[in-house]
Picture 1 (cartoon, rainbow, N blue to C red):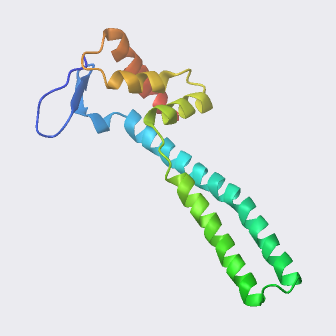
Picture 2: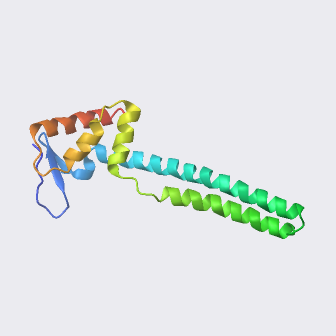
Picture 3: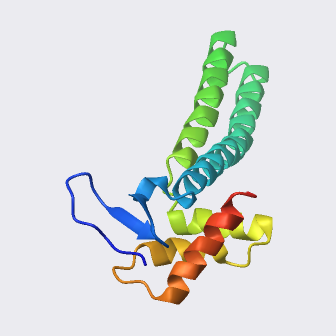
Length: 147
């Protein structure tokens, strides 16, 4: 039975007779790892998208250099701006919010878990879960070991 126990240590759960802190449930570290990987993926995607803009900026700088409208120092400024643009794009995309629900859905789809992790994550937030919810949580914990 899944029950919240009152104490000063935060939320505790009891699943099928095993008690512990909610962060000890194997799903929580798994979701954290998936979120971290999604954050890195987003950073690379943002950097790549900003890299296209940075390349365009460099082409403009080279064009202006060939027209003798800027000196070589100006081209160095364009290069620094291009690098800053790529870094800013990577940081901006990495800082985007990644909800636990999305991370669970990505892990479910990439490992063929048919929405087990996502459902169990939703069931963990219930105050009084049914026997079905407890069984789904236990099933997701077993499946999380293979992820």
